[in-house]
Image (cartoon, rainbow, N blue to C red; front, side):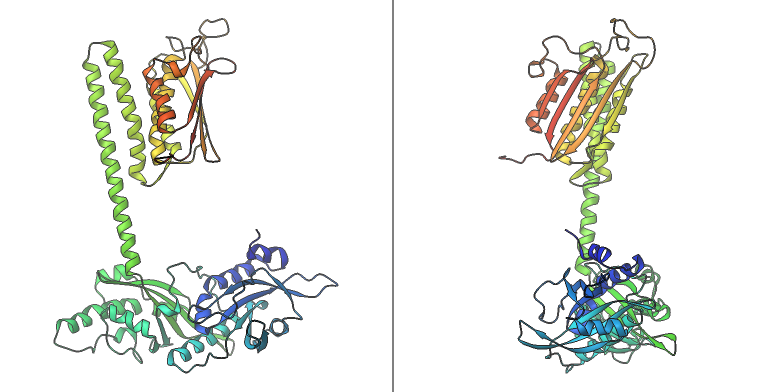
Length: 543
């Protein structure tokens, strides 16, 4: 299905920078919807076709979080004629805000609208339509402040000052107006702080009235005598001083918060996002948006809006997840170390045993333990439910190549990739592949390590033999093929009846643990081919 952004590319003559400007507006206009208590639509003129009416495509729509919506229907992607949307068309043509009213079919009466031209550089590239209720009257102080700031931001949109070129698209953590709203003037003095913003100050240990003060002045006249007042003065001032000026705070606070948020926004005329942290009680995310006016052709910063969001619980969960990941990595690291210790003990015991059969058995056990350790080594670096199996394959190939004792080497190649494999599938699959590779390098070729030629005699040139591993993942299945060009299987061989311990382990792992299928038979052109098909996720109990 075509997205609105793709429709804009197809249906308009906007350049890539102009489309990026509109995308930034869509990514940051939740603030505008909340400040204006309104539904917002973004309309963009389509490429004109001679002989047809001019049309607008609705590229975006957002509803306020602090008022009921007036537009229950999703209009994104629809096209409308400019003649039907004459107020929006007038705003596009004049390059200035056009106000009026339109009939609302659901309400049965006219509702006020405000059509704000969106300018990029010198060109008007769209119109933001504000649809609001007549019941929205600025009677409360916060409503007056919200609507005043919306008007200033709307003027910035018409002057190509908002959204800012370097502004990132908002994320789930980005503060909204309802989280906490602080309006400051050009000198950084607070003109208004919403009740939720005052609550955020209280959580930071600041209880003085904010209006008329700079943020650095908060907490300095908050009472005397008790521990709470002293704590407010010392810690509250530190946090706010750092947020505003980056000065007057201990080194620890400066390191955790960084430079000023509000002062940087006022000085540079660019948005700033910072975290203010009072360890270990509260962490507040601060987003500062400068307010800009054009005066006699010059650009002037007239104030800023600071949106505050308490992200203490979010950061606490982040830290818990980091601690959990660290603990899981440590567990896998210790398991890997223990397996490597067992592997070393088996290898040591194998060297001391005189029986050839016993020595071979211990070496095989040591190799199987090492193949499991490979999986835990990767999990110790990146714990999770998925394991990059390609890294495991490369380790298993090196293990198999190192085990070749003949004078002529065996060449092992790998084609394809399984991608990320579920951890509970990776371990048995790694043991299976290790067994198949070891079986190929030990038994597929003659005793001196060379592959027979067509006459049955050993060849003199080139590598002793080739083993090819092919990997593929498709439609919830994993396919592994191991093929060699060696001597082939004995006549009448069936893997279901094999007495080989290694192949018996392979068969049981594939069929019983991984609930897959295995087939082992002659390869085309000579040699042996093993084909394994398993589900990409390990079936759960009862399946």
